[in-house]
Length: 498
Image (tube, rainbow, N blue to C red; front, side):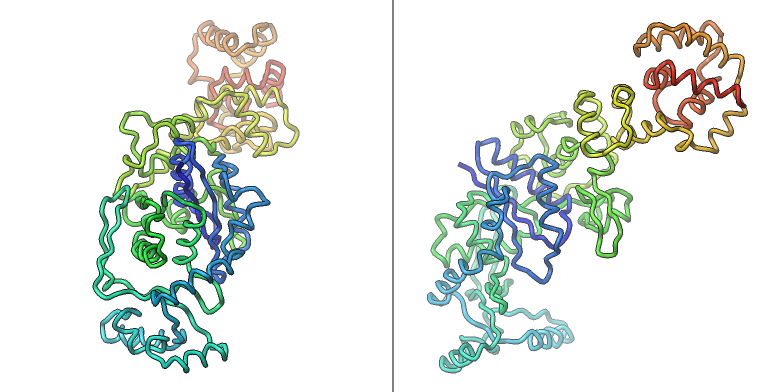
């Protein structure tokens, strides 16, 4: 049975690239009746942000990507690395006892001075099989001095001891055979002076103890994988090592570089699933708040790196589970298009039932003084044309209280152009109208235009000004249907006040 995990670090709001990683893990597990786990990797306590953990869980809840383990409140502590500190020590001790790791006493200041000196000489320094011979560690210091330093509480770290010129090979499910040479790697820190494991050790130990069968993560973790492969070998766990798959980067719309957390402001679209308030008290919008359906957001992310091999682009969750395949994930980066994202959201809104949209919008966008029947009618007509749910809300505000929300410049201009006799005739006809279904009103309005020998362009903008106070929105017959006969007549009768 497949067992996969989403293992985010709570160092800030979850980026859409991280959500894609969660989605691919979820789809891969569900298509095989496998298990999808969540594990909070908070070993770097200095970078942990207080709100980030809740943000992660709220995002998964909004999207319906509910983990099978590590999600419910009773399990979260058990699946959080900072609560598992004691567990990692036995694995560190095993590596030390076998000679696969060593203790290093070099201070951060000493290491920084060496790096700066090397940089001035045009060389990049790393702590490796050659340089460790000249450093303060248990490989170079006498045993009694090491014991003395440890007993006196001297700060130290534990490093992985890499052999010189060893080839590390592993098969990546997306990239094929990948080869690294240890000459290009450094002796990674496994255990820090604060008593916390680093990402490398905790990641390998937890994946082993949680019986993870496949590790599906971002391309940025590819350089770390040879370290993890070596850890499995040195811990004697090579037979239980999971299969690896490294996802392509999400690229900026112009294709130049990775889509970063700062690109949202630059390009004018969100890069986060949910809204949050930054440390500078700036509210940063998310896809949920600007009006994306969760199904559309998932659909959009799925296509950023994965190709179904068909012309189909709009998918339900169930269709994604059925059709998703690691084999169809691209090696190259996926360029993000906000226009494509809007198109996908438009199609999901259009294809959703009005009942579902009504329930969803009223759940996530609380509306004061909600007139349910009017709002439902608006959803019926608006869902086939809008790209965002918030556009429906904007139209609703215009329908309910258009004087407060009207576009004054547009309104004043159109009021000057009103053909009063035509509007008065329309009022008279509306008062006699009995068929108030959408089809009935549409038929009525077309007949009205024909009978008066006028085109919609001659009165359309004036009617929009009177009925909604803004230029864009549903068709005129749809506005009449949404407002209802009585409210429509009431607003048209404002011509008598002009």
